[in-house]
Image (cartoon, rainbow, N blue to C red):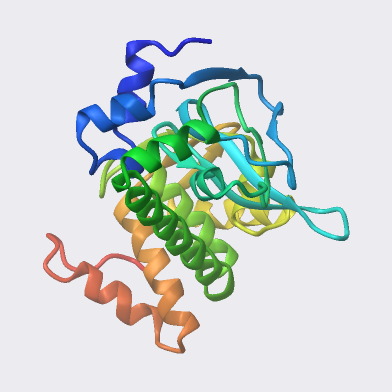
Length: 255
């Protein structure tokens, strides 16, 4: 499927291409095509020869590995304007993980052979891709840190605040994909995710199917910080008192 001008606009704004001049970007995207996937449909499988790198135009795409035990380990979930598989595309490697659509999605793919040809003519593309690969690695390190250092409640609260469009006050968000995938992304079992949602009611979070009503985003952020302090052995109350300093009306009741 031929990409639309809007598709190319989204693609040209991804991090890996942001530092390149418009002519270079246009050349790199010249052979791009769009794949439309239904939710659950596979984009590529773990171990397949890397034939392209990808940019999400619409929807969400799940990147995961199958463990020796046959379980699925979610590595990341990519949204509109994010790219993946850049490194293997220009090293002629194999996909180290599998990818499938977490929702109905439109994905722009750029052939690996075209990427290699462009790199030979314009080496700055390789530098941009190395930088993008470094960013992906940094995010994976952050994810490992999150899984090892944060409680289940903190991970869920942080995920919800990442969806909120404001820093404080009430906010209603829609869960971007199904709860089982959210659990996998956060390193939780589905039942652990349900328990975390239930515990968050006391912090003003109301989960209604795929919609989540957050009574006060700032209060949820305090809970995240308090949980982090508690994990380090410091009183959670101290953190909340600091967070309330300077607010009208003095301190608030502890969450």
